[in-house]
Length: 89
Image (cartoon, rainbow, N blue to C red; front, side):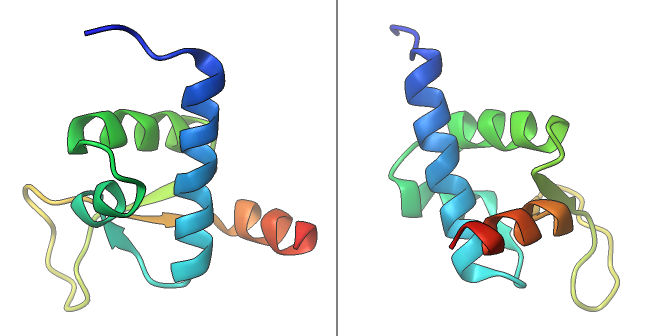
């Protein structure tokens, strides 16, 4: 499998951030984000983890009723990234 250039990874990350901004304040599952940007789940998850290290997205570890997720991961845009993105629009 050929590697994807840094420039293309950044463009796909921008698509992820745009989707999370549009669905904010709700958190989205990895599979839903992957469907929206038309990429496979593992690749999407790796990009989300990179964005989390950059403090642009936040992983949601608990469900709406307070139960801990064992296998699933939900993501939302971090507060700082949301404010910065809102000022750009």
